[in-house]
Amino acid sequence: MLNALSVRRCAAAAAVLAAIALPPALQAQARTQITPFFTSFFAPLPYGKDVIEDPTTTPPLRGDERLTNAPGLGVRFEIKLANSIGFEGQFAGVFAGRQATVTSAGTTAGFFLSGNAVMLSGRFAYHPRRSNFRGILGFGWQHLGGDAWDPNKLGASVNKSSVGGVVGFGVRANVTPRLPLDLTVESFLHSSDPANFGTKQFQADIMLSVGVPIALGAP
Image (tube, rainbow, N blue to C red; front, side, top):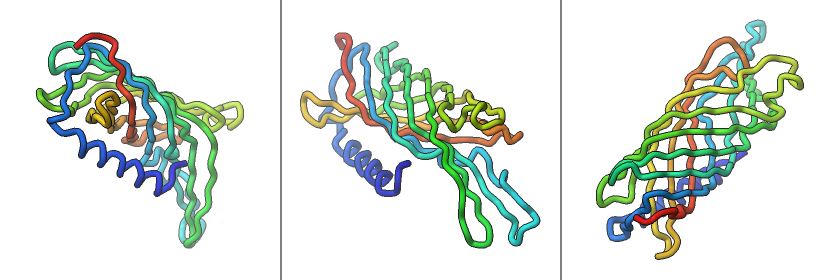
């Protein structure tokens, strides 16, 4: 699970890359490119809130469940459809587990189960002229796995997959003349009920990725 220090380091890295991605560093991009990347996954919203509740306690026992923040790896393929428009296909795997937190009378308890999540998406990328930035809009699919979502081990049914929209932005920065980096921040927007609580909750999972674009064709 990522801690607060990891989050701050990711934010600092994002600020540095954005600062050096200025118009003087513009380069012509290839018609097709592949970008392997490292990603940090964040789940700011619970998929089950107050689902663990006992009204007989004083105060009532309450809790929630959510995916854990986690690192991961992925790869992105982009093909230019026009000068400013591209289409991206992306795969990412993150080591997100299942976290439950229960609160009562000022005390906190809970449990953690190890798991993972596979993220697939297809999206259009808009590249403004004379800019290293791009906007992202598309659709995605998430599939949960591991011990946290194994119905045989849990003894209960689960909903492992969900679909939704993807929105985000990216920036290409030249650390050296031969080493460009691609920083992408995106959110997977969907409604899901993975633990089968009976009510779908809105989710806005976030991925902060840093990768190295590799040209596959001439500009």
